[in-house]
Amino acid sequence: MDIVAFDDPIMTARALVLHDLESTGVADAQAVSLLEESVSQRAWWLEQWPAGREFVVGLVAQDVQDGLLESAGRWPLCTACEDATHALYVEPDLGGPDPTWVCEEAGVVVAPVGGL
Image (cartoon, rainbow, N blue to C red; front, side):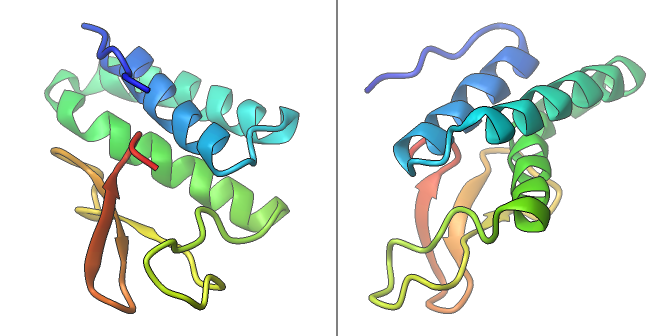
């Protein structure tokens, strides 16, 4: 599946994180609501700090990950290890540029955000 990057970093972030939610089977109403809430908050954040464009994708992914941890558990689960009970994490920590999902236990990059 190809994901088209928009000129708008907020819409790009939404599309990429939604793809990861769908591909991991957790794109239910609650998860999509968390995504929409993050997109709304990060749009305001980006208005305040336009130079933060390259950080938005990773930050939205982290926001959704944090929200799901509180309500539904770890997401996304690692696909690189046989024991899939631990989550992947976004690197770099501040979300960008070019954020990836990383297995911290194995120390490997699993996929770019939007590539699960």
